[in-house]
Length: 294
Image (tube, rainbow, N blue to C red; front, side, top):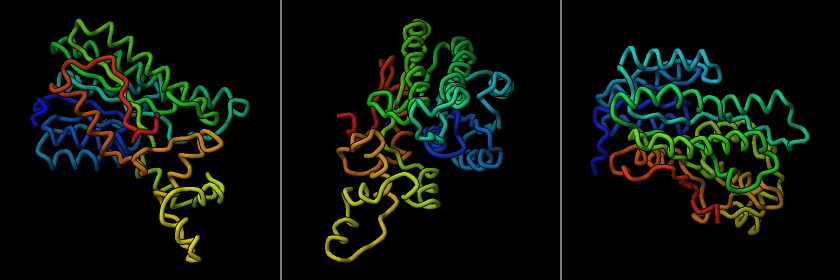
């Protein structure tokens, strides 16, 4: 299926790892030139190398988008190298969820989540929209989270930022539809990214989930333990147990598909929404969650 992305310029924030990295590479596979943005220069250089190996142009911009100066630097480079952009994808959001209730969340922590999870998206959209207008239209996808659809008392600040960004997306879709600019939001569910996998393997399950929660999780380890053959739970099973426990009393993310999502599955949804094949989709909030919203 030709997605009509060849020759387009896509800006992907948070592109040094996880869902952002997969999204950037997927755009390149579809023939788009890609601007990759994050704070880590070395990781960005690696992503840019992957993109160029696919035969398209890459621009790596190390920038802190939690600041206005970082956003200005990014779009100065985009204008200088490509003259503008057709696509903006914001995958930014803190991966330090803290798992704190509101009563233990400081003003400083709340502001930090708002800067990276909300304001970085606001600033990049504000900068990209005039560039898209001059090119006759464009597409924006902002990444929110399933926590805006279900309640997680220990992710209050993170969720507040993402819920606000989803609201901004809706307003932008209405405001800029006449400009040919489509704006959509993707809500990932329990996605086992490389970063999450590394943390689980580094610290072990005890940091996030009680042993009895692991015992209640589905999968081979609980079966083998019942047969008197104890084995260490896999990273995937630990992650599912954590996801189940996030809302308290087992009310967290329980994917109907029975497995964690993969970052490339989020990337595929994002790239489709930015493509000509999704030309009549705007203002949508798309769950990519394995059914865990039911």
